[in-house]
Length: 151
Image (tube, rainbow, N blue to C red; front, top):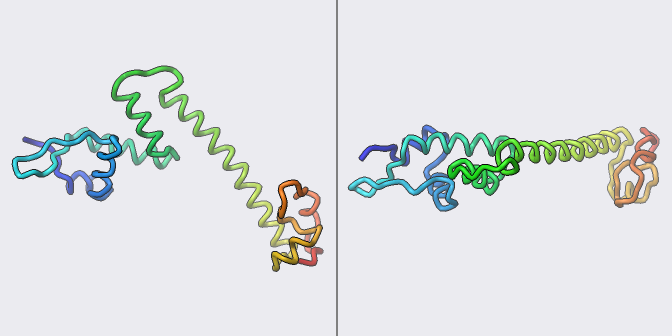
């Protein structure tokens, strides 16, 4: 029997042995053959699968999403709405929405620094504080106060 033992595969993929076992339990990696001594022997393709998993995670895909992508790829049940193109487009839209939210947070933090906000209780009572203490508060009008805020 030939194949990669757990330690060698884990090192080559940049993960630890527990990660391999976890991916097996999740169904991301096929259960490997065993040597006569009981050692796991992974096929060479397992390294490719691990690299694909890690790359997909770096792109923001969850393990559940990765599992779905691998399932579609492995079994050839491809439909236009299930492959990487459709899922990458959806992930990109999600990332774009997160960027909009993070940009708003960054801008509010900058405005709070410029306004001299130093006490959350005082800020919550000040109409010029740019920190949105309620959902309906107009951040733009408060953020224009500059360094004149008393909070």
